Length: 400
Image 1 (cartoon, rainbow, N blue to C red):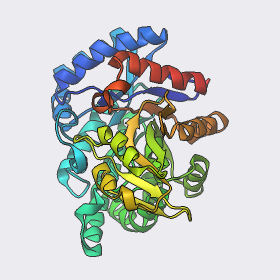
Image 2: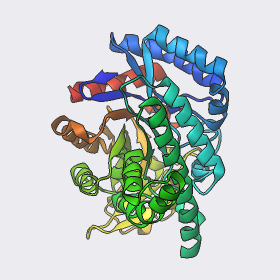
Image 3: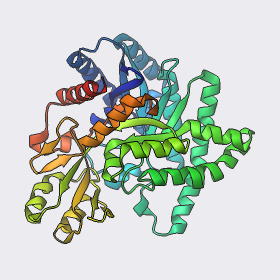
Image 4: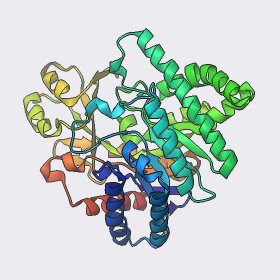
């Protein structure tokens, strides 16, 4: 949906289903319903989650033509893809496997390039398009600095293959596409400083020579292509969990010449660790579910941070924890600020939206991304179409 400067939608990873048939059926079921709920008269933007399996099916000429025909019929369009989860994302144990295969592998590279070729055919003329992706890998898979360096070497080479493909697509179609890397807790990249490290220590000094040789261009031309085609996916939930303030982070990226390709609007769970730790522990148990990773980052009185790889680990340590506050990677509804004695990081979303009203050039793509509806505690669940519509309406009211 065009909202002022922005293309705006929700991410379809909220819907279960890994095949293209299941993905398409969900779109056909929910997009008309949500449009009607919002009383949206203009073209309806779609943030499409495309698994590897679905991408292999959709790239077939007949499937793609049928989808394009449906988009035209519904006055809808695709401007962004979620290419972070490669495989099953619902009704299975995902946890750290959401990062697999990672950017050290040909599987991740090939899936991403295939998805970009599909996006190039779906994207309307005159509009930029992006695909969000994993923060290189899961940091706990690498036990030594040497293992991590080896992973970064392989990932940098694969990312340059993607940049070369995006430069080719731009030459052939005139469409600008960007890969939006999404930092999250316990990824190799989990905050703004580590995103700067990616560019300063890897993509520019090591990636540019690879790209220069591959395309027969100068190093400065290669650097321009890297900064154009590799950008950031700023997930509000993820940056709130690591206690970053949006204005500071946006300024840091801007000063470094790094663009924000997409902002995913999402909220985390937060709470103060008071004296009654046993009661808090019991009330958090329903959130310690087995499908997704729910990393926890605590902040001590002196401002230092303590990380737990998943909520069950944090709950085991709660009695002796020195932190004053916890923030939990659990995507909760945007429009609810408090849950009894727990809260959401909704204030971070309001700060982001305020920055966007004053500085719309920060990004072009906005995407609501609450994908945990089916694993929320029972009292927090609503009918899915209604839930999506309420989230979109909540953001629209504050954007306008």
